Length: 560
Image: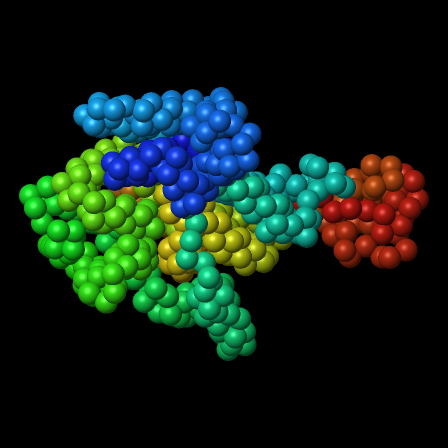
């Protein structure tokens, strides 16, 4: 059992137990309530205790739960302490004493969550730095430094070919990032998944990229192919999912507003208002909760006496936890209105304390999310695009021709990287909503490809030549007077040949793979009738190695 996730559920469990006890219930009913409607891991633990009590394997639910809690992981000590304090509070005959112990249990659960959150946040440093190193540095090395180091056969016959580079870039590296993402997801104690039922429908517009890419290739071609395919596909996906994305934002905002309203509901009920008036009035006072307020009012008017079910039907679509809390408050209000007000105040205080405890963690997660999004959207395409641009003039210097097709390999990789970063950032927060990850991907992908395309198109040769020209003009101005006599003296001499910063590559040398003999075109092979300056390609096919007498097909080109 995941200790971190169990601790993450602790405030919710303490709140459910508090709601049940404050409503006049026993600890037995509170434990059954958590077993039926609590968070997954806690529901499993409490269900085990309930089954033990029902099967007479233990004297009661309290004793059975104590035995179950003894078996929780060592890292969940805060969870064990908070639940034990709730059990002790249920035995108190003094209402004030019980309230005080429940508040202490709530504080203990929040302290455990705060410590666990700090530990979780610190554990993210390595995976995120690993994603940065694997996702940017390794492709850059593969696509630029490794091919350049291979010039001249530095790695011998085992040099990386294009197929191997493609397999590493498009398969191995994304697989490594995916494993890191799965590790982060498994360690997140707050993550709640949801909203993926219509994933295929929302992703369907991305298929438009295929015909758009084929049409662009047939009509235009060039290095903007992936960008031309991604822009319409991502735009269509954003348009289709806009309604769902907006609804999810409104739901999250309403959930946050409702938690803030619980304390106000308690104050109103303590002043004598009934549940319906207090709940509807408090919610309608907030713009983000107005729709939920109208839904709750309508459900209560049509409930035909089953107000608890009406509350759940109206509030559960926004938040099941809030639905349970308001349902407990409504049930308690039918017994004693002021007790229900006290329960609402206690729950509202717990919600506020929980938000304060998680505020720093959420700020850290947002900062890390922004960093990862910026990496995929700007930094990675900029670095990889400049690597491709740099390879062009360098390849003309060296005669190396291994960079053809690098732009589309890296472009396809950037699409994969944006998808993986969208998945990773969705796994960092408290809620994992598919539509949020889809929106993040559709926003990152076109921008990333645009930055990459622009970076690939930078003409470094022109930049270098412009710098050289500017520097020459400056130097001429500085030394014009000093060099005037020398210029007059050499006025009739021939002008010096302009220095080309990118000279043409010399003919390549070829090495015999059998004996190691190296054919140098500048020297030739006079003994065999091959004059100096003869390229290897121009040697007759019947020529053999002067040392071991093997044919031309046994020679390997050395690229410098």
